Length: 428
Image (cartoon, rainbow, N blue to C red):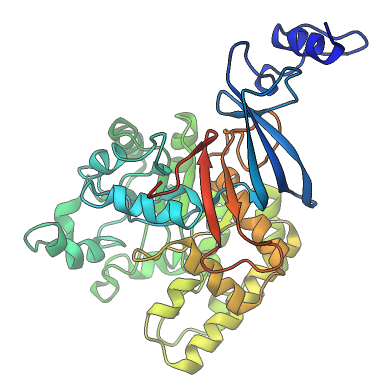
């Protein structure tokens, strides 16, 4: 019996090899009897650049050299292989009517992981039933976010109500598209209800926290305000006690500071993607101290820069917004804040966000590629072994026609997308 084969058998049995100090991780070992696929002739992404070599896949994971002949071999033709990309902020998967088509569009762009931070609880089960399958994207949903009376997104849902049937007031979506909290005594009940609806995480709305008291009862700010920031700590604590992470919609730099201070896991926008009338860059500019605080807290920040291009701003104002986005992003990245790629662009996806970040010239292409790859693990599925092409990780990967670290095409040149080692490219 050859030595490599013996090592494979010992590892499969969970044995400790002579001289080893610990049992091998079973996730890195090909299970006995499992089909082993060997992938040859490719350049494999690593955090330090692309490396030539061979990879083995068994039972849906990358495994170490199994010490036995592969069941079959696949020649990848010199392609560049990366982990799949992700969309950390979009709302276009909640409806059964279009979830499968949207999933296929994501897969065609190389996107396998999607986060929906506000969905209607009545519609989400239909959309969710069509994703998280072997041949679709994997997605998480927050159900309705937590806001204040007259707060965002109530007005928005009133405007969109015609798409969901007859036009009706936004307030009629309470308990479905949003949830109201006005006192500490309501928090546990709302969080429990969201978890019962199937929320994978929670969403809170912070809009102009520095003006909350002055605007709480002002009709001029209908739909343009959010949660009482003094209630946010208890909401985050209640969610965390139930094992739910928390994302926060924010508008201003002060909202950002509140979100970090109360312990949210993720901030859904850069401050200032759209500016209030009369506002200046100072309302939305993050300081070095803000960036350091977010880094120390481990707060993830989702970019969503592309939505600023869709509001019809005057060119001079849009230029100001984009300059501040660039400044804030560079400051956050320099401080070590985890950035996630998300578009919040219903008609498109994170490809549009990547294109906009390229236009802003914020990051070198290899850095932007790394951010997009790490988005899934950082912001969507932090407990899964994804985002690497190494033994023990899920065998999810893209086969690309060209080197994305030199030219991250928009859309990327995706030849194929594999999920658990299976080609799930739409149309195959």
